[in-house]
Length: 156
Image (cartoon, rainbow, N blue to C red; front, side, top):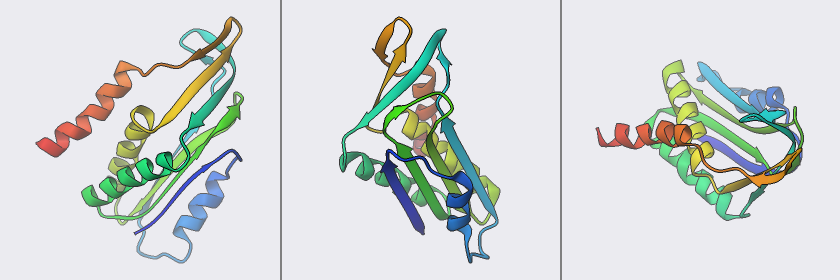
């Protein structure tokens, strides 16, 4: 399986990344993409910007481990994970996941699995700039619950 993992400060083009994933491939029957975009408000706070920090090297390795886990669980034909770091403003792309498979079920499930991991366990830290100052963003219990179902699925 072909996989691409990039952590970068620069923006990315979702259509170009998807085209590169599928170029010349006639075995792919489904591609599921998700793009996270910086919002102007969060939990009742106006957000002027956010800064994403990561641990270079470790972050790519950790994401790679979860891509490999997705590959073990589903018959995938390709994965792209791009995550930006640095200062982002509302409307900026934050990250994307694209998953290719022969059939949609595997593509949807693997994309959701990877998104739940990235939201809860990937080694990124997010600081929001708000009108009333700045604050580090804490994990949300709803995100943790969404990720926990994958562990239960593995057990069951």
